[in-house]
Length: 171
Image (cartoon, rainbow, N blue to C red; front, side, top):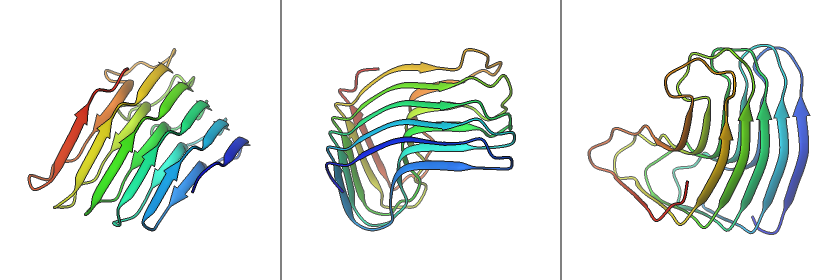
């Protein structure tokens, strides 16, 4: 998956809308893509993913530009993710990506955080996630009233037989 431009996708529907720039469900190399201007202005819970990795096969995501993702969803679980790794069991390399201008403007929300530059939530055994040399900036939640509204890199995994190698990122 390379050299694509994904831009100007938005929804204002009610319920739980999800906007995804690029999603992979097989072994993939995701490189040189530009994902921008994705937005949700819905009532209810909503999620935006610049890149959504949903496979137990190896994936490399590198040299992508992800910017201007914005949400105004009013649900308690409204979240914006630049890159999200939500499946596990293999080796995943996330490096040399530029992620910036991610904003959640709703005042509601009970999920920590509301904005993630990179989210690694891969709880299965034998996972290796290498997250390095990424540039993450301008993450905003101006009206949030929760403790951890923003995380540049968020690792929520708890497997003791997995390795999460995070180094040389600029946030």
